[in-house]
Amino acid sequence: MTSRESHLVELVDDAGRAVGETTVSAAHQPPGQLHRAFSVVLVDPDGRVLLQRRAAAKTRFPLRWANSCCGHPTPGQSPVDAADRRLREELGADPVELTELGVYVYYAEDPVTGRVEFEYDHVLRGDFRPGSRLRPHPDEVAELRWVDPAELAADLDADPGAYAPWLGGVVNRLLNPDGQLAGPAVNPAGLPAGLPAGLPAGLPAGLPADDAPERPGGR
Image (cartoon, rainbow, N blue to C red):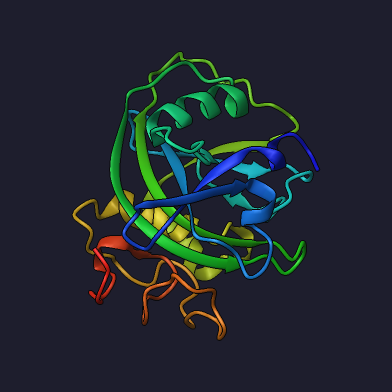
């Protein structure tokens, strides 16, 4: 197990309340355990977003295009503090001010590695200043590119297999920060049968967490 895979993540219920902790590796073993995560989108002055192609060594969805930076807070750590750390580690980026756009829950199975993503994902926006440094770590990032978000949204529909499965929800949060999704964010065919306990009944993959149906004991 790599050092990153042995790090602790915070397990949560479908309302985002902490309920325990486990390792990164254990959280992503089938059938998956719902845990807190973050996704950062860096936006330049022209409105373009920075994408990274995940390195081949990644244990989940390697060589797929994803948002600027992703990761997991340690138990009790804020998503913003964790994101600041990962921006330095993955991208060698200068500090940026981060704003949370919203949260959504998604579930995805990696057909190549067999790992599972089952995450309560905090979507964070950062404004990238011209002249700021980017020095991506080769063990984390295969390549970078800037893209118009509307064009990206169209390409996600046309060629979803080229992208990490959480990216659709991240882009929807960027384009619709009020929480109204423009369309299916992830896995439009719906969730597979036999999902782990804790996923709100009827919640499609990639739906904003605040759109989850109410239920007894929920938020």
